[in-house]
Image (cartoon, rainbow, N blue to C red; front, side):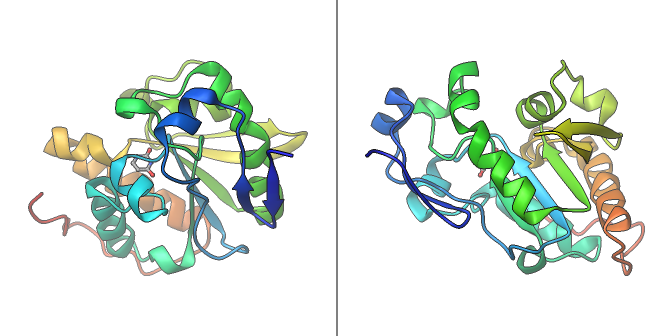
Amino acid sequence: MDEEREGLEVTACERCPALVESRSRIVDGTGPEDADVLFVGEGPGAEEDAQGEPFVGRSGSVLDETLRTVGLDRETVRIANCVRCRPPENRDPTTEELANCRGYLEREIELLDPDVIVALGKVPSEHLLGRSVAVTKEAGTVEEVRIDGTPRRVLICLHPAATLYDRSQTGTFERTLTTAAELAGVSGAESGQTRLGEF
Ligand code: URA
């Protein structure tokens, strides 16, 4: 058997030959298994592959900092990816790879039953909503969609890296995470000032 699961962890999987080749490890979601907010990124990058945790590189720093700004905390949210293995040269996951990993993501969503799923960037937004998404235009929009038969609230969000390429996107990213905090019933978001600092 080449596949094993334990709770929300995937301890072994060989469905995607190219990713089995490129990964050093499977990167499972992190955070409490009863979190109200689930963040979903695209797939592990180099740092995530090295450390075995999602969003621990530069994008992760932006995410962590903005979470704090809006009154959330990395320790209280769950963070996962559409695919759990690093694609070669950080290319986008293929349709087949996304499909191969879909069951793991659906199980994560089902067990967590979050108040809101925050789709970080184009790939997770389109994967979860099943349509093409213009993320820059639609960031901050909440859409209800059936995932594995259950209605779920998906919040379209920029990928944190977008704020590194274009600092003018920082406000949009922060406002979207404020919406996530509100949907999860978390108050205490600091208004106005960003604390992203220099990256
Ligand atoms: N980008 C992603 O989409 N996921 C990660 O885990 C890190 C960077």
